[in-house]
Image (cartoon, rainbow over all chains, first blue to last red; front, side, top):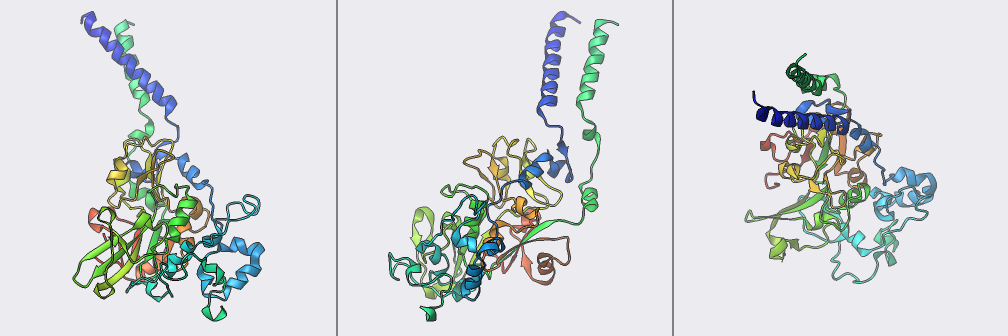
Length: 156
Length: 257
């Protein structure tokens, strides 16, 4: 064969080798078909651990109880017992270290998530006591009259 | 040795060495699943219990660092209102991040719509999240192997490997994937993999005051979710796509898309 065939061929082989070398360096060694086979499981295995190590923010009401058992006890006798502490008090993160104090959401917007009266037959929403937020003491904070830990109207 | 022979054999050796041994193995996924049969995450939603408070959406956004103001979310809640004349009206303002606080249904560009009380036959809420399908379409279409399914069934995205091409976002029949505005990669619900793999609950299920959301191990016959699937009438979304979703709904009806 002539030189004009060989020369481009060398270039192509060189490029292929360069790509393969780059691939060997760049692709992590734990990359491959894992438990779910090629179609669904082709990935870098260590990424699973990275997702497991993702930092959580919510700690759960049992974590709150460790220090604030009096407050947890207070709310436990009311209808609001079912609401996790962090829904209103904010995610705990590393409280009490960081943040030292949690910011409580006292806005009307939080209460009317459940207590806006909607017509929702075939939904649990219909059974929750509700108001029309555009008419019911507009501009006031709900907690000025209602105690969120003991919201019963008889106790007002 | 001639130069020609030398180059020939070099090319053969390099090509041969670059094919890793694992690429020549034939792996049957069923065989591997049978070897690890004890865990398969699944999710149960009780639409009767959902009141549309949206605490799940808020908790998910906080837990997983999804920008609160951006119009993307890993989970959302839809409101369906079925009128007496059969018309179905649906809305989902901001993914129900702030719950449903008005009777007006947000119809996007065509404005808000109020449906008179006497015209409402049925109205209910349907929470949505990734179905972590048994044959996920989003994983099949990924050209770089950035999204995958773990042995216990969760579909995850490798953020260091995703090139942001968006095939998976198009491929998902449920529209649960989106482009993360900060990470600049495809993003989706992970079933709070960091929480459930440490024995915890997902952030959305923990935040739900009414127990409308539950995560469980479908392979454990004593698990509450597995029990409910056996003993109750449950449905899945878009069964016809053949993706075999693993989020089950109690009280699903045909109007829910």
